[in-house]
Length: 356
Ligand code: GLU
Image 1: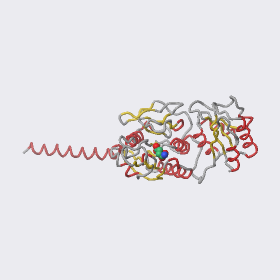
Image 2: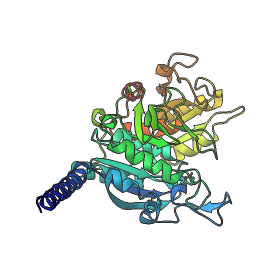
Image 3: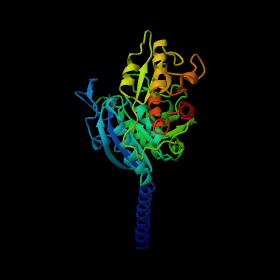
């Protein structure tokens, strides 16, 4: 009789402990918002083995049903911000996304994971790196294989992104991309292969870390200004200044600079040869664009690594140009768009390119 009462007591105690532990686990879980924008990660192929597919074909809820495990590590809330192939990413979606991220991080979000096509992921990541006003984790994730493919990389990448988002050590790292078990910084992000799942790299500085057994391991951090230390603010903006990229190559003429001037662009980024060098024709046309039309010109390079440095073969001060240092043409375009919301002075723009 006494024995039975004791067993009952022990059983009751165990049940209570289980309830308390489940409740405290639920409480301890961080809230992660998944904002979906489309891309291959939401893509559907005709069969499990074909390479061709339609990007942005499935919704965020369908996408997340492939990784139910994320619910064990976070309270997940999901929103569909857009559903496009990221080749069609544009200023309006950028502004909407940045404002929504800031809103949610000011409310109940502990971290944000954004699903995105890989084609322009590096541009969106850098835009957010400069316009998010919080040190909470903001992580972009994509995939190279559609959700219907054998060995689709999307579910693993999403799991790793959420696991990285909830880790306390991910605070203050700026906007990152988590793919192929790597954590990559937005300040040096490049898609380097058209098909490989390991396409993203930080070619100048190396990755920030890796994800191992569902935990991030950081090995470096960015020394560039970003997020809470950024001077840029898009809260009250409904559009961004127009900036185009113009490439230099053997025999490049002034054709595209002339077109840009006619279109009243506010800025031009050059993807020059070598250390941002330009054909004489291009350089003369760009000098006129600055001096006669007040267009801001930033010199960058078509080379993947190394700085486009000031004071090398081109005298930027004489021409009124700024040099991009470690920003490639795509990030340079993002930074120049934001810079032009504050100034047109090439020296001030040069300062920004040295700091971001
Ligand atoms: N072009 C599509 C996009 O960037 C698919 C590429 C991808 O996501 O890998 O959204």
